[in-house]
Image 1 (tube, rainbow, N blue to C red):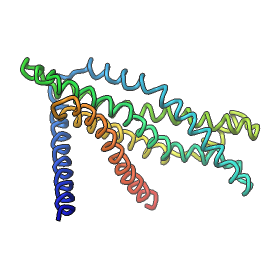
Image 2 (image 1 turned 45 degrees about the vertical axis):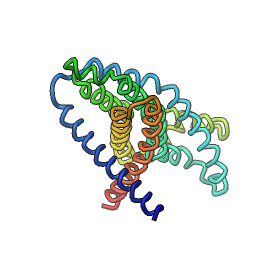
Image 3 (image 1 turned 45 degrees about the horizontal axis):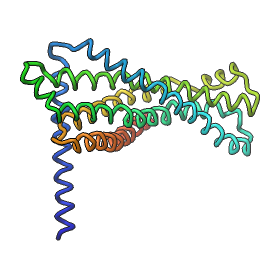
Image 4 (image 1 turned 90 degrees about the vertical axis):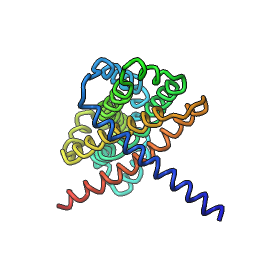
Length: 260
């Protein structure tokens, strides 16, 4: 009975949290179209999230391009299909590897940061002080951050994809003496808009999920310093799970369109 009660409590708390997150998202959509628009804060958040994540995304993308090419090349050599390397790597990175890896990195880097920042503001009663002074803290703190992550993640994905493909080219240049022009001609020869558009669209949803969960965990943080760490940690875990669910749905819908 104890095990059943624990499962029931866990399920109940999980469903309650899903309901609270849905209400939080609904409030965001109501607030985003109402005045005043915190445009300066939105630009500041875009700069902070994008600029501070460029190096991490670039290094990760570069290593992914190197490792993916080094691991795939021997197999393609066995089948005499090394010439397919540029198209295979580019399509794999642009369609799936680039967006999901970049989103997971940003979930750890940006999502946890938002959760910890808003959580500390909630614990130190700064958000309560903003409400008392007549300022709308949800509009200033939450809406701007969710919009910034939604806008900046596709930019980071494109940047990471480009660096990853360049890393793949360096391996091909060293291993197979492939020129820059030949590599990218082969890449764009097999790359279509059907590869770019779905990956870009789902990147916006990834960014929205990162900002929404990070803000939700921080904004609803419980009192106490332990709550700040819990908010940051749970923001990463919850966001990572949500990203995989969104990715599965996006791939499923894209596959249906390809069949049509």
